[in-house]
Image 1 (cartoon, each protein chain N blue to C red):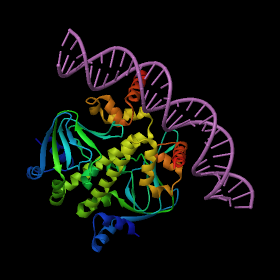
Image 2: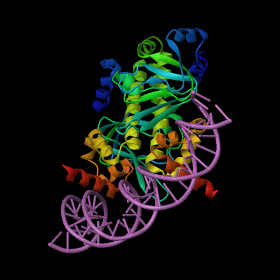
Image 3: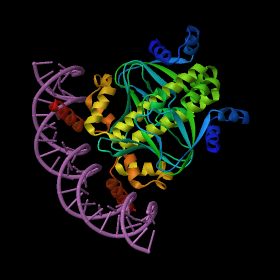
Image 4: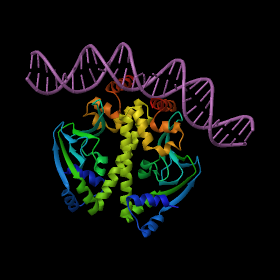
Length: 193
Length: 193
DNA sequence: GAAATCTCTTGACTTTTGTCAATGCTGTAA
DNA sequence: TTACAGCATTGACAAAAGTCAAGAGATTTC
């Protein structure tokens, strides 16, 4: 039930069977149907969420009602409105399921208690966020300083698994482009080959 | 000499005088003249750097030789090529001094040893990176999903202290714009008022 | 299985942004 | 003081991206 959660954990910090059992007390499983919300704008984000199965997206809604996608999450990925989670303030993000999902949730209270009681958990969290930060910085560099075609290639390489499961107009939104522009970039690249 | 370093540390995790002394063993002070490099592309990033005094910028250089600025750092801020630092691989970033600087450096070895020996250091690092991640995610959202004028306003609010010390064409580079476009955005906004 | 909905692509046009060049301003160095 | 370099602004033009609309395939839904 928590297979992928512990697989990811052990990749960074290895755990004994006893330690895994100890952590399990603090985890909550959750299933989500396609299109259901995990988090809605305005609510306080109460959980960090790891995906065991399925896919989700996080997005903003602007004045005109358009979705602006800020993140995807597939199996083994973590998704949350971290700003809302850490500060316990209303979320600006919405998160919902792109497919039926099986999730593992860590509540704010569980998170705090695990940090206190288990140094390995703190280490895992530190490494998790460090990796996320490095990846995000990389992505920011691409966005600000690479021409569009290079950026597209970088994204496809980085996120191949997403490309196969998510409609292109969502990828476009994630890249900050209109769907039409993304479509044209794609045809430009395939013509060159 | 390490005033701001420990001020920032204590804001997140409070230290006794003994603990401060313990940490001091692992810190190295460094002065940098304006225009000197802290890190050059291709070198391995050997330090995390906190700014006690002065200002620095981190940037990429593209094929045409243009600088693309990815970060600034003022007093109390941390700057580094974290990807290079953590993986000990050649850096893609350059970092140099915009003004004469006084810095506090933590070497990779010191960092590892402090993580081992001092849980409070690990906690501090976790919180530091968490804050950096949340801020970067915010910035990413602005860049991808806000119209230019809103983005400009968000940047100026977020980075007022930078605006007063850094030429505008560097701000433009940081925002991924040409200097001319930034200048036009500014005049458009001031005409509206 | 037919209708409705989604998705992607393409064309025409508009808007935005980048590029290049010129100007004026400021501060620095000779 | 004069020359020079760096910086911000502006205009004219070119390139890039967005918007709107139409159409063709898929997929979903009933």
